[in-house]
Length: 210
Image (cartoon, rainbow, N blue to C red):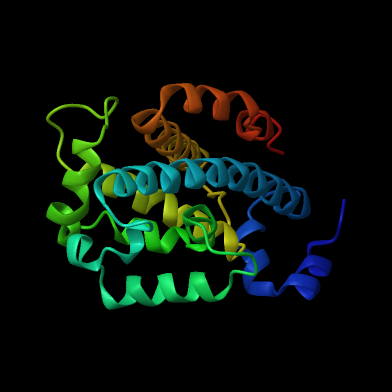
């Protein structure tokens, strides 16, 4: 058993304090890292699914070669326009829509789903096909689900704990996180959701909690 004081020295006492309630804080810390990695894999798949879903539908609506140039139609915020410019500036190969889309962050995509874009973007998404999103469910549940996944992504990226001292609360929270990822994927494409579920390591890692 690794001395938790070693972890506190290596990774900071405040960070390790979240794990000190456990008989083996080092084991729990290591397990949390494994769980975060497993969730991050799933988030990656769902993020790519989401961005391609949005990109394909905005491209179908716009007559321009690159939908993100269609400011008149989509009325992107100044922040979104800045993100597009930065994405273009990072390209090393000739520009294609796919290459720019791949450079745009999750932050960009989630902001396309807010209320201010309900008319300019959300209605386009619905018009060009959301066969698996419940009818006549409004935009808000979709945005809320994406926002929760975005917060999870940031939590993992900043190495914040997914564990909770209360086992029941931890179980509920992790169940909700898993449900959000699966739900969003199924709203977009159930076949993709099935594949993502088949390669996910989350359930396996959760079963190994120390």
